[in-house]
Length: 190
Ligand SMILES: [Fe+2]
Ligand SMILES: [Fe+2]
Image (cartoon, rainbow, N blue to C red; front, side, top):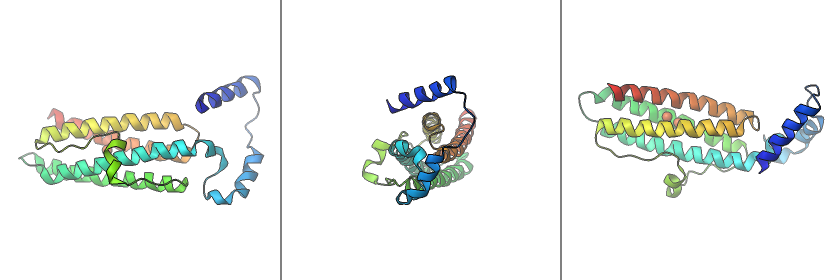
């Protein structure tokens, strides 16, 4: 509902006024005053709770991905697996970096990063997997990466220009998820 109103008013302004690109002085003044909000400025204030909520779901997803890749790293066996097992750990470390960036952003926004393990799986977009077979592990990870790619793409679209800093973080993370998926699909076809 909030989104519809904003999109509508923005389209209206563009079509009817065609004003010069000018900064909103009132918002600059407001930024000077509301120090209680820390680094949070008024422009994305209305969206902050929604953005924190989306980021917390992404954080849960990253944490489940870390656990899945670590499980796979330590259990991968077979002739072809040493290199792939190592790559599972590399992915686990990269997912850890994603989780940290997302948690940091949640805190910057004045939100609370949710690391509660009790609700992790319900909040995660991707699944945990404890397959014993290497191909099944690769497949499970590819499915999870595809889910992550879809979730981040949708988040980037939703957040758009409402919070450019969060958007940029998500674009970086999305690029790495795409690399993960590429690698996994290469291994799957070997
Ligand atoms: Fe990730
Ligand atoms: Fe990934």
